[in-house]
Length: 488
Image (tube, rainbow, N blue to C red; front, side, top):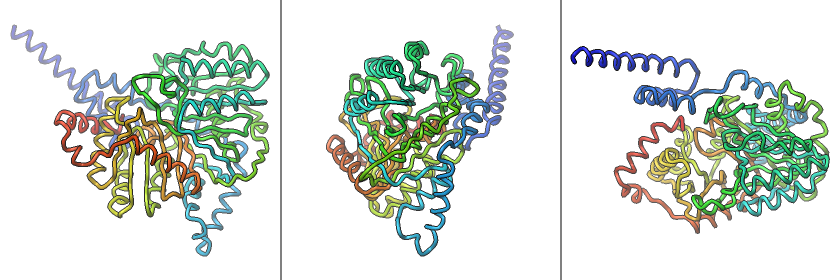
């Protein structure tokens, strides 16, 4: 008996030692920030074996070859225009002219970090309801004459997903060039055969970066979270909605789905078109489906009475600069009166926390609206933790109670705003491919703020006192989830 226990004890010690060595090798063989490093060490050492299963889903980075395919994709048609804009902005930044427009520094930031094209004249239409959005989007698709390019994190095999697929099949049969790019994890359950008829009609569809399947490439992180639609190179859509019945309030678990999306007409569509083509070419690299003759995708756009300046900004793990996060920080630090934010996931890093704290303690009206219910339990508990932390620093926290809040909007002083796919969390800042529109227009910002005020009618303020009344068990779950926040 003693011999048996000694053998078991030796085996346990051996497993622990092997696990510890493997944990150190696994975490340190890839470059990552210190918070994520410690979080993974915690998981791998405290949860032997099973921690490595979690790492397989959440921790592995994309292969170097895949990142190079994104990084080396050319800037296409806008390269010369962007370089000319940089020269113009450099002149505008001279001391005598620097005060002309308050947002030029933000514009310049995105020019330098992301080569983001600045478009001065755009029509912008805001949608905060999925049914209205898809009705308009489908009308635009039906009118398409030449090209339809679609890129979504999620396209489900459900009622709205099948409506979209059928419509795209019809347009492809009419001779319109149709391309669909989707994320295999976000669209889980949808097989490549879902698009067989589209391909038979002359269209094309592919999983982002040609992921074979989630069984062979089961990374939850480093996903294509972008939402892009361009039609004939003249009409574009960008925002927070995906394609699925739940985004139209048809799933009882979530109820009404509150999100924000934009319809754009103007030069900003060129940027959406360019982003799609770069993602498509990175996915199709070395295949006949790659877009080589792209000038036809950038037709002249004639718009009248269009006065909204817009920059389309993208970020992702292919670029370590975290461009969209830095854009958020730029807006927050520039605020003089108020900062209003809507996000389903509030898991900010230290730089974002400090910026929000500084603003709140400077007397700026900082308000953040989050959902009142979870769609991912660990993520939601971490969101609650940071909501409690920020409430204690003077930030007003709202729980949206009329369904699920999924909008990703930032509004500053009634002057500037951002709408897109990026949440206020580590995943959007560091791990996923995102795209946002940054808008420099008081009228559009005012409309977004009116929507925010209307959402307040369906929300409750959660005060620091209310947070202290939460049960010890709930607060423990929040704190524990917060320890994992760099990898959620």
